[in-house]
Figure 1: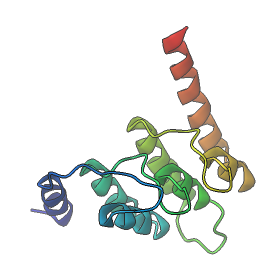
Figure 2: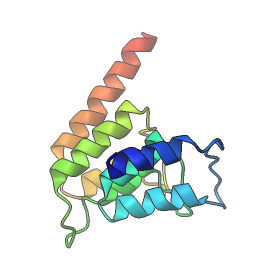
Figure 3: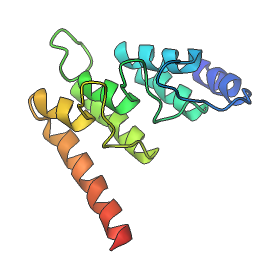
Length: 137
């Protein structure tokens, strides 16, 4: 059994649902944000698949989507844009909220645009928003 399979099994055995709060971030959520900031998107994916809410917030109001799009800004980051785009796609597929804002009033798209306006991220967001609109029209 591989390490990722063992982690998935251990996380799935947890029965408590992830509860998000403005003031308290549980250990699983803390691990999720640490994995994202380290560029360890495989661990972040495992945590989300193991019932950590894709829309949880940390104490700064960052969602996993915002935290990921902020990674584009890190000039010293060795995380490749392709890995970030792949993880953003995963978050979108898991129904991550695109319009959530942090305590500074910025959304994930705002951070993406500030960081060179990554076209791939804009296209993903635009396509997702278009699909959502078509459901209601």
